Image 1 (cartoon, rainbow, N blue to C red):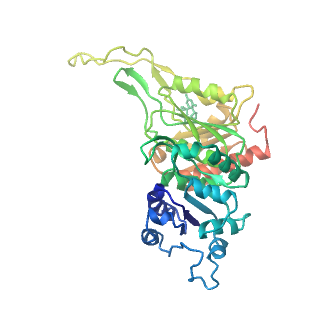
Image 2: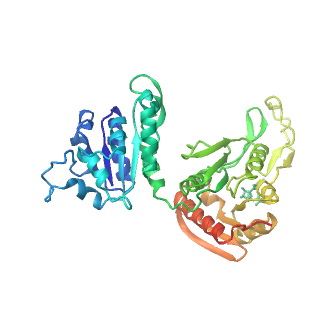
Length: 399
Ligand code: CTP
């Protein structure tokens, strides 16, 4: 890919961006405008990208002296980050008086997409001229990434910050994922729930939430509008995902039923606590010097997946079965008992907290074993599988 830098203080983030993109497997060809060279040196970017940097349309290193053509012919994308207000204005008019704007204009528009990451002061971003230019740039087929909001180098606070390098990397990766769930609404539950015993103690389990967060991310990458209902976990919210934090199963139940009504897909990855304490102590329970130990009376929590699957206009419901033994038999039991079209079976001890997992898809037609892989890779494959099932059978799973 080509990474183009135009002039702005956010150029300092470009060094990290090059590293992130290379770590993610990209080949990065850096092109800089003259203004960008005021902020960061070509030496830094050459060292990090391991390729000579291009800065001029008169660069004699290319045999045909046509860097503006050659650089995009093998590229999968051009990302301009930072894209200054001036550079955006230039792009929109099809002006081409430096190498970067030239190559943006000369790129094969059908197979080399243009992505821009604006970076500027908030007043410059909010100005009607910039907003007009950005709207036209989008209408011309460019993808605008960000900008973010927050503290700016000038000391002001507002919209116009370039996205962080890791965010830009994730946006770029998402851009290239198939959009099988475009226009669909997806609801995901993730993580454990926490059922209080008293103000300082509770019942919970070892679910890390990683699989559910990976599914939410993969669904958003596939173009869905995603709501993620998360129990107590310390994971970052995937980009473009609406997150609702809950603690108890009862809260998760209420949030999931409210959101399920207009969802097309429900993936229940949460390890919902099966029981809660019948009456939560208002004050910390104290030890009675060995004379007695507290006895907890438990009551069963509502089954969220089964409740969603009972809705008259229910989404396509996918459940998980975390077992320690008899994996497939128990998974098939859950398929029937919860009345859902698909259950993902996995061994609890081999998935909780891990970064990878091995799963078996269990449906009415049979079992399909998927080999062990990273949770994000599995999530993407699962999202593609759900998209294909919705495509084949638009009302799949509805009673
Ligand atoms: N589930 C749910 N609400 C519950 C319990 C489970 O939505 N109160 C969902 C889980 O998110 C998962 C599926 O049901 O998708 C199966 O969860 P699991 O804990 O494996 O099964 P249980 O139904 O709790 O049965 P058991 O604990 O007896 O194995």
